[in-house]
Length: 294
Image (cartoon, rainbow, N blue to C red; front, side, top):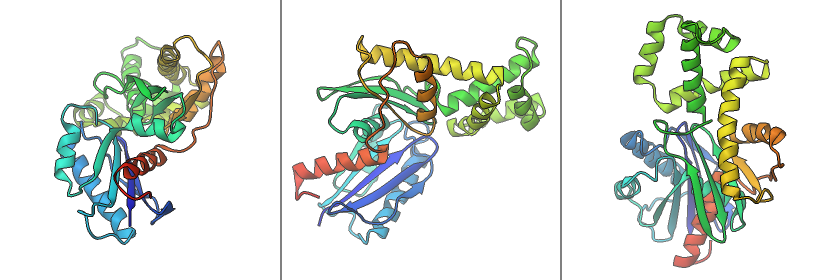
């Protein structure tokens, strides 16, 4: 009997679920960070553990079962060789590794045309048109991920340093940052070992201070949203009617902010499903080409 497992793995956490005959086989289960580029060994272990828990909950005990089809949508999967190394480390016969944006697109639109703006710890945008995908961003924390949680956190720290140096006016967000770290030495110690997920943990403070009217937080979010709107317009290629859906922990909030100011107006749509739904939808399509319909 065919069992499908979908996994949505991001820089902060991951979620997975199994389906049997179109019905849930156990609850959605959660795991840790699954970025196979920034932390390949740790992410591989966390993914393996999460898959084992999902299979156990579904009553499945044979990892080599040819009727087990797994789709993993992962941050960092576009890095050369990352997907192949992960697949080789897992005991399963039918594992497909995709980028997180691939499953976000499938979750939001399935086969339909549209743009997905996926913003969580990182960020990536992509358009699906006539079965082809075009993407913008998703290059990781070091070179991109604009407007993502890690980027917001890093910008908040950078601006707090600018306030300290007298280059930027003091603001509530900067005071919140310094209340946490207290000293420059403590902040520098933090950044010496911080991962993207650590920076992303600061993002809720930026969002909260923006809601309270802090000009520094507003400027950081405006900078991120300006980038996202430029990316959307590029993907629309002159057709503002192309629908845009947001996914990820920050995506809906930021798309709402962008849409309030965008001219011409954006065609904002609600995703058909989540990125996890997209992974399961992809698993169903793959299983249909290899064996009995799930």
